View (cartoon, rainbow, N blue to C red):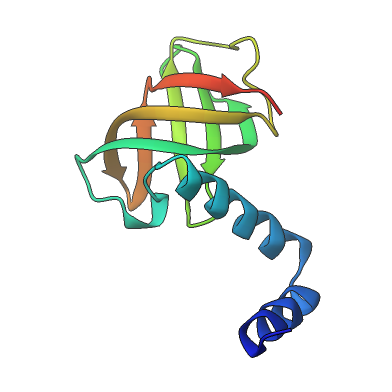
Length: 121
């Protein structure tokens, strides 16, 4: 075994499950040519691939907002579908390809009403 492969294997042994999952998400995103959440700038058009880690319905001024925390291993952003209580297939753990224009609101990355594609596991 080469020294680089040995060090890589050693790092994986000491990694937490969350770190291993993040590394896998980054690997998959890179393979399909998606951007990295950690590199996004305000008002940038983005095409991303990742996983919904948290899903919540948060009404704003009486209007339902479905919010999903989305991660690709390099960072997280919030996907927001305004006027929606639920979307079939959009559940915690679902893998998606999403695209839209990134907004920074209160220091948080957001995509409002993103185009999305469910990825079969």
